[in-house]
Length: 439
Image (cartoon, rainbow, N blue to C red):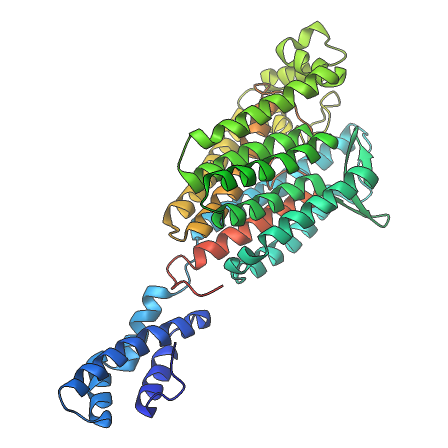
């Protein structure tokens, strides 16, 4: 620890150095590191027979000019900004504005009922709020969340129980917390991000004993999975377990630990499909949509026909497609291909891929293990949603309600959660070259 009775020359030197370092959260660590080194030099000089004053001034002279030392430390430890990732978030948001405008035109032409507030206006409003949240979290020290991991996990689980018991039921699923007549929060979607953040901290701090590790693995896996089955929310279950598997591998670097999550996911889906006639019909419709083209297979048939008829240039911006449901949420990508063509669709896929590449770049450049685990879990969540939504929008994967196209689809809850996730990833990357401070 830095001594309170440092020589005034040392105190002046330390103050001059840290004044050059913009990252104030590092000042304490930098002062401690330099003070320790100066103490070693002073002890060395005192051993040669010099008095305290001579030894101190000699030690300070060996360290170099404080302005130069401070400037070099500032260069090494300055906050980093992931400009590439920020750029692709901006691109995706711009695409979403065009998409919402096209959806409004389509609904107006087809005389379909839409929100009382224009989709584009709501998208702009939630994007503005999301950007503010993202910016605030970028400056928040993500390492402070580590000590509250259990609190985040238990709090998220308790609220999820309340939502399952008392939440608003929409499309057969209890997932929403309602705040007055105009605002509701999709808690099931939001809770996945919170569970992943909590799991990252708990896996990071996990007991090293083998038996204790397995108990904690099962707790982190079973509790959220059970809550999502109670919902029931198949999409939330799938996203959480898959993201947790990626997070678990990031923490352990062992493929063997992934066996319990895989078995849990298979058992959960088997039980859901065995007791739910609706879920079984939807799965059967995926394999053979034309067996019931006006029932369970209707959406699959409309997706197939919309994609096939699009061509390279589509049918035009804002063209109506009254047979394709939910074009502002789950089937947004299908509608964009239908209206703007395959070239636009391929462009969106390329943007999603490059966005994922930038997330991998952030993960690869983070050295802090806790930060790497958080970014891995959050990146997995976003990448899985992109993959599944694009897959089901092309008829390549089963349709699961609740898996939106990140940043693009309509909806305030998922957009705010995604922007918050990006803010945390920016916070991790911002501190990737900083000295590790005490939590």
